[in-house]
Length: 353
Image: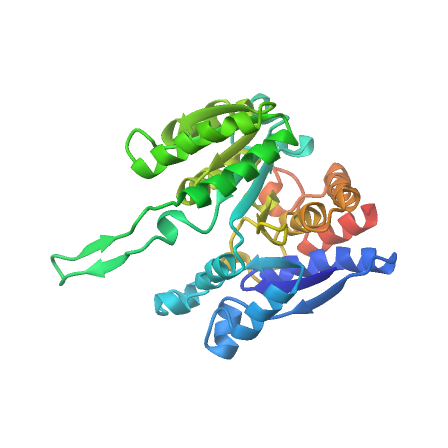
C-alpha cells in the first residue's frame, strides 16, 4: 500500500503526524505500507514557488492513495490566485480526477451534547453527503473579471455534461445501496437549467437501482431541513457548489468540524483523504488541534481504497474508545470539561488500537 503524505500548512503537519503514528502501529503488526512525504500548498510555495510542484503531483499520481492535511493561511492571501495554496487541492482533484467526494456527518454518542442543536435532534445522526468535485461553477469556463473600475463585471459558468452527472449519481446510488437505501438528490431545478438536467438524469437512472428509494429536494429547502430534522437523510448527492455548502453545514450538526473526515475518489477507487476543516492558522503550533478527523480519514482510506473494512472499523473503534475515556480537545469540549493536547488525543487512540 503506497501512500503519499501531504501535510500542507497550518495544523496540517500536527494532525497528520498523529495519523502517521497510527499507521506505524499497523506497520509494526506486519501491514505492508509504504509512505512518502512531499510539500504542498503554502509550504510548497515557500520552497518551490508553486503550491503544487510537479514532483508532488507526480508522487500523488504514483501512490495508491493520498493522505492530505490542510492548506492555506493569511500570509498567502496577497499572492496571485494561481499561486495561492488552495490551488493545490483544486489541482489535485482535477489532475487525478478525484470527482466523487464522500463526506460523512456522524454524531458520536459521547459528543451529542457538543452540537449547537438539541441532543434529541442530532443523537444517532449518520448522513453521507456525496458531492461532485471536478465540475460545476468552480471549474466552468468562461470565467473572469472584466471592465474598468466602476463598471467591472465578474462572471463564472455553471455547467455539467451528462457523463459527469451520471458518474456521480452512480456513486450516490451505490453508496445508498450499501447504507439505508435512501438517496436524496439535491438541485435547484426551479431556477437553473443545469440542475434541471441533473434531476432528469437522476429520474432516468432510478430504475437501474430498484432497491434504492430516490427523492429530490431543492437546495434551499435541504439547507433548512438539515437544521430542522437532519435524521431524515441517509445519503445526499449533489453538485460541487451545493455540496460544498451543505457538507459544511452538516459538519456543524456533529458539534465540531474537527471531527469529520472525507474521501475524494476517482473511478477506480483511488482516493485523496483529508479532514474537512481548514489549516486553522489561529491555533497552529499550539498543540491543541483535534487530530480525529485526520485519523478517521485514514480509516476511510482503508475502507474505500484498500478494501480493508476490518482495519477501518478498528481505527473507528479506537477513536470511540478515546472519546469514551473522556478525552476532549478544545473544539469538542463543553463548558467545564478539561481539554487535552493533539498528541494526548493521538496517544489515546493508539492505546485503544
